[in-house]
Length: 173
Image (cartoon, rainbow, N blue to C red):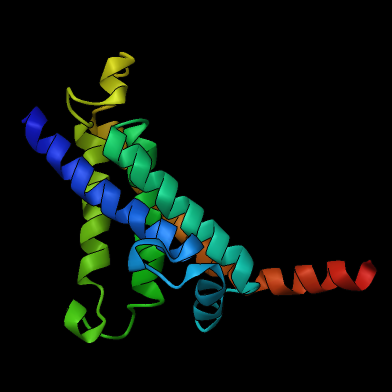
Protein backbone atom coordinates (compact mmCIF):
# COMPACT_ATOMS: atom_id res chain seq x y z
CA UNK A 1 0.00 0.00 0.00
CA UNK A 2 2.78 2.46 0.89
CA UNK A 3 4.53 1.84 -2.42
CA UNK A 4 1.26 2.39 -4.33
CA UNK A 5 0.72 5.71 -2.54
CA UNK A 6 4.29 6.73 -3.34
CA UNK A 7 3.82 5.99 -7.05
CA UNK A 8 0.50 7.86 -7.12
CA UNK A 9 1.96 10.88 -5.32
CA UNK A 10 5.10 11.00 -7.45
CA UNK A 11 3.28 10.73 -10.77
CA UNK A 12 0.36 13.06 -10.09
CA UNK A 13 2.33 15.51 -7.97
CA UNK A 14 5.20 15.87 -10.42
CA UNK A 15 2.84 16.31 -13.38
CA UNK A 16 0.87 19.01 -11.57
CA UNK A 17 4.11 20.73 -10.57
CA UNK A 18 5.26 20.58 -14.21
CA UNK A 19 1.99 22.22 -15.30
CA UNK A 20 2.65 25.02 -12.82
CA UNK A 21 6.19 25.48 -14.10
CA UNK A 22 4.81 25.57 -17.64
CA UNK A 23 2.50 28.39 -16.65
CA UNK A 24 5.33 30.32 -15.01
CA UNK A 25 8.10 29.80 -17.53
CA UNK A 26 6.91 27.59 -20.35
CA UNK A 27 9.04 24.72 -19.07
CA UNK A 28 8.45 21.14 -20.23
CA UNK A 29 6.15 22.47 -22.96
CA UNK A 30 3.50 22.30 -20.22
CA UNK A 31 2.23 25.84 -20.61
CA UNK A 32 2.56 29.19 -22.29
CA UNK A 33 4.92 30.91 -19.87
CA UNK A 34 3.86 33.82 -17.72
CA UNK A 35 2.75 36.21 -20.47
CA UNK A 36 0.91 33.56 -22.46
CA UNK A 37 -0.80 32.22 -19.36
CA UNK A 38 -1.79 35.75 -18.36
CA UNK A 39 -3.48 36.32 -21.71
CA UNK A 40 -5.13 32.92 -21.62
CA UNK A 41 -6.51 33.48 -18.12
CA UNK A 42 -7.82 36.92 -19.03
CA UNK A 43 -9.99 35.15 -21.62
CA UNK A 44 -11.75 33.49 -18.69
CA UNK A 45 -12.22 36.74 -16.79
CA UNK A 46 -9.12 36.52 -14.56
CA UNK A 47 -7.91 40.11 -14.33
CA UNK A 48 -5.22 41.20 -14.05
CA UNK A 49 -4.01 38.18 -15.96
CA UNK A 50 -0.38 38.38 -14.87
CA UNK A 51 -1.35 38.30 -11.18
CA UNK A 52 -3.55 35.24 -11.70
CA UNK A 53 -0.90 33.53 -13.85
CA UNK A 54 1.54 33.85 -10.97
CA UNK A 55 -1.05 32.63 -8.44
CA UNK A 56 -1.99 29.59 -10.53
CA UNK A 57 1.59 28.78 -11.50
CA UNK A 58 2.91 29.03 -7.95
CA UNK A 59 -0.07 27.12 -6.54
CA UNK A 60 0.23 24.25 -9.00
CA UNK A 61 4.01 24.07 -8.65
CA UNK A 62 4.05 24.12 -4.86
CA UNK A 63 0.99 21.88 -4.41
CA UNK A 64 2.44 19.38 -6.86
CA UNK A 65 5.79 19.32 -5.10
CA UNK A 66 4.16 18.98 -1.68
CA UNK A 67 2.00 16.14 -2.97
CA UNK A 68 4.93 14.37 -4.64
CA UNK A 69 7.05 14.51 -1.50
CA UNK A 70 4.19 13.75 0.87
CA UNK A 71 4.67 16.92 2.88
CA UNK A 72 1.63 18.60 4.45
CA UNK A 73 -0.42 16.22 2.34
CA UNK A 74 -3.92 17.44 3.32
CA UNK A 75 -2.96 21.02 2.44
CA UNK A 76 -1.38 19.87 -0.84
CA UNK A 77 -4.48 17.85 -1.71
CA UNK A 78 -6.74 20.81 -0.95
CA UNK A 79 -4.63 23.12 -3.13
CA UNK A 80 -4.65 20.63 -6.01
CA UNK A 81 -8.40 20.12 -5.73
CA UNK A 82 -9.21 23.82 -5.42
CA UNK A 83 -7.15 24.68 -8.48
CA UNK A 84 -8.70 21.85 -10.47
CA UNK A 85 -12.23 22.85 -9.44
CA UNK A 86 -11.59 26.34 -10.82
CA UNK A 87 -10.21 24.87 -14.05
CA UNK A 88 -13.24 22.57 -14.34
CA UNK A 89 -15.57 25.56 -14.06
CA UNK A 90 -13.67 27.91 -16.38
CA UNK A 91 -11.33 26.37 -18.95
CA UNK A 92 -13.15 23.03 -19.13
CA UNK A 93 -16.68 24.15 -18.28
CA UNK A 94 -19.52 23.69 -20.73
CA UNK A 95 -17.58 21.22 -22.87
CA UNK A 96 -18.93 18.01 -21.40
CA UNK A 97 -16.93 15.53 -19.39
CA UNK A 98 -14.44 14.18 -21.90
CA UNK A 99 -10.99 15.71 -22.26
CA UNK A 100 -10.84 15.04 -26.00
CA UNK A 101 -13.55 17.72 -26.30
CA UNK A 102 -11.79 19.98 -23.80
CA UNK A 103 -13.99 18.66 -20.99
CA UNK A 104 -13.42 18.37 -17.28
CA UNK A 105 -12.66 14.65 -16.72
CA UNK A 106 -8.90 15.15 -16.33
CA UNK A 107 -9.04 18.03 -13.85
CA UNK A 108 -11.78 16.38 -11.79
CA UNK A 109 -9.67 13.22 -11.67
CA UNK A 110 -6.70 15.26 -10.39
CA UNK A 111 -8.96 16.86 -7.78
CA UNK A 112 -10.18 13.44 -6.66
CA UNK A 113 -6.61 12.16 -6.32
CA UNK A 114 -5.63 15.20 -4.25
CA UNK A 115 -8.62 14.78 -1.95
CA UNK A 116 -8.17 11.01 -1.64
CA UNK A 117 -4.54 11.51 -0.61
CA UNK A 118 -5.62 14.19 1.87
CA UNK A 119 -7.79 11.56 3.57
CA UNK A 120 -5.64 8.47 3.19
CA UNK A 121 -2.37 10.17 4.01
CA UNK A 122 0.81 9.96 1.97
CA UNK A 123 1.98 6.58 3.23
CA UNK A 124 5.23 5.50 4.86
CA UNK A 125 7.55 6.92 2.17
CA UNK A 126 6.83 10.58 2.79
CA UNK A 127 8.09 13.65 4.58
CA UNK A 128 4.94 13.71 6.72
CA UNK A 129 5.75 10.24 8.05
CA UNK A 130 9.45 11.08 8.50
CA UNK A 131 8.43 14.04 10.66
CA UNK A 132 6.01 11.91 12.65
CA UNK A 133 2.95 13.72 11.32
CA UNK A 134 -0.14 11.53 11.28
CA UNK A 135 -2.29 13.40 8.79
CA UNK A 136 -4.56 10.60 7.59
CA UNK A 137 -8.25 10.63 8.54
CA UNK A 138 -11.74 11.37 7.38
CA UNK A 139 -11.38 14.68 9.19
CA UNK A 140 -8.44 15.70 7.01
CA UNK A 141 -10.40 14.64 3.93
CA UNK A 142 -13.35 16.80 5.01
CA UNK A 143 -11.13 19.75 5.84
CA UNK A 144 -9.34 19.46 2.50
CA UNK A 145 -12.64 19.26 0.62
CA UNK A 146 -14.01 22.29 2.49
CA UNK A 147 -10.82 24.29 1.87
CA UNK A 148 -10.81 23.34 -1.82
CA UNK A 149 -14.44 24.37 -2.29
CA UNK A 150 -14.08 27.63 -0.36
CA UNK A 151 -10.86 28.62 -2.13
CA UNK A 152 -12.31 27.74 -5.55
CA UNK A 153 -15.50 29.67 -4.81
CA UNK A 154 -13.58 32.69 -3.57
CA UNK A 155 -11.29 32.61 -6.61
CA UNK A 156 -14.24 32.51 -8.98
CA UNK A 157 -15.98 35.29 -7.06
CA UNK A 158 -13.06 37.73 -7.19
CA UNK A 159 -11.33 36.77 -10.44
CA UNK A 160 -12.40 39.92 -12.30
CA UNK A 161 -12.72 42.18 -9.28
CA UNK A 162 -8.99 42.64 -8.85
CA UNK A 163 -8.86 44.70 -12.04
CA UNK A 164 -10.89 47.48 -10.48
CA UNK A 165 -8.67 47.39 -7.37
CA UNK A 166 -5.47 47.57 -9.42
CA UNK A 167 -6.90 50.31 -11.67
CA UNK A 168 -7.89 52.29 -8.59
CA UNK A 169 -4.38 51.86 -7.15
CA UNK A 170 -2.81 53.07 -10.42
CA UNK A 171 -5.19 56.06 -10.55
CA UNK A 172 -4.29 57.03 -6.98
CA UNK A 173 -0.53 56.83 -7.69
